[in-house]
Amino acid sequence: MLRITSDTAGGEYRIKLEGCLSGPWVAELGACWIAAAIAHAGRRIRVDLADVCHVDRQGRELMSLMYRAGVRFAAKGFVMTEVVREISAPVDRRRRN
Image (cartoon, rainbow, N blue to C red; front, side, top):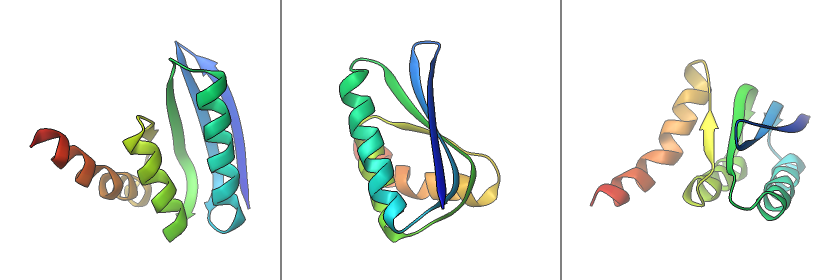
């Protein structure tokens, strides 16, 4: 199960996730992200992963797509911080080259 909430603060749109980003919840996050990108065009989107316990392969693929589109992730703890590092590293390497 995944809880998705959102708010705006300081010029950015924040999507907060709580639970597991897996299965049907990946598509739900994707739909929320697209709707937010359309409704809040020009605002930075940040996804708060502090309360996420697991991300499956499809969730990582979505996060990678979101990161390449400019979404930024806030994580805490070892697991989610490592997930963010794994999805951002290939993109950041290409930007430096």
